[in-house]
Image (cartoon, rainbow, N blue to C red; front, side, top):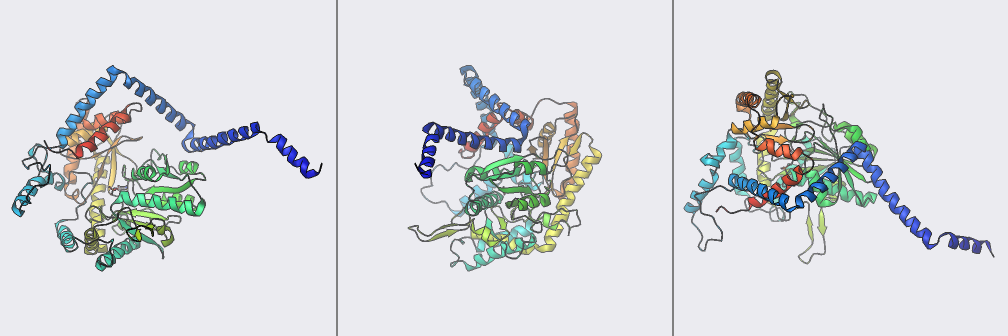
Length: 548
Ligand SMILES: *Cc1c(COP(=O)(O)O)cnc(C)c1O
């Protein structure tokens, strides 16, 4: 027997069928335990235990809800709630309900009359226009003033039917789109060779940034199970991106006091599948800017990408210093930052449907494109989710940006951030029952309870006084206000109403309103989120319900 034969004989003896099975099992065990180790590292033993508890509690609740008596009760309650929701949403109107196309087209006068009624359709006969013009809505309408509205309408009219999918037909639109992107890149101090595209809004900008990094990691790193590390406080569009594009989202907590993402937690959540770290400048819930320098450095060290969400910061953060406010590093000057999203349709004052996503290089931007040379309809190449796009929005965005200029945005930053600071200071000084979370630097801040009162009840009291604040969940219950130009003249009114709301909620608590009920329920771990999710689904159904 030669040495060769001896060796194959040995191999044949050792690697029997049983061994192969054991090895396969071992591989599966290792594979899953590696997943477990990663999850425990990212979420901590307590986090994992908590999540396990929530899963078990939910499964139990789901079982209990299956019992006929319970099911009937829940169904009854949900129907009542949905009925109330419907009444507040699907408003009766004197305008006829159009269920089918009119056989003969209506004339201008008829349409004008109907549109007039629809524009002012509101609850209990009050005027829906007045609702936001009064400055009592948090965020929602980023109005640049009536003069700017005229600029927008003129641009929309001129480019009404243009479609940037056909640049050879609309060369002017192509030029304006390239310039809008270039101007925003410059605002964010992009390096030479940086690149971007316009999108339909902040959500699409974020979706695109995540897809781009996923495709980059697949092509250049061979990562097929991509993950991203996202602060708890970052926008829900990152979860949407994870859901749409098959990227695992690891949400990491923020510091309880500073409200910035905990860098140690980000560090622990990174593993060999991580492709992207995310920071906000600022975030939506409490308006804090994450430690972008630390995030960029971590990303660089792990040779992965780092996205900064400046959708809300948009045209405020780049002008903070010039407007005389304190700022923190947030843009392409920070080492390791590879992409940024910025909403022209927020503090840029462009009409809704307009945002920018930027990358530190053209090479990275290419991973965003969709190119198909084999389609029977012709060679197809498009930069974003949409095919045909509204060139009119690009023209309007361009017109607004050049009408405002650096001076205009510096001034609007002064006013808007000034209003936010004034309200914040007065709350800290004059309303001891409330606190401001963290130390926000921009236009948005969250108001929490200093201990004795239920802040959602205060939110409900503010609703009764005509204010629309957002309820903020998570580890720190709060209501938030995103100041806009419309808030500037109503700072005193806001503080006065807030004082009344606090006094009311201190003297006669209980009698929970919508915000208190919904968020009270949403915070309960077992059934709350399930029921709220069900209601939210019914809410979307209602959006498409015809007026009876
Ligand atoms: C508004 C916002 C977005 C994007 O929202 P859109 O409604 O899709 O424009 C993203 N991040 C933050 C922090 C935001 O405030």
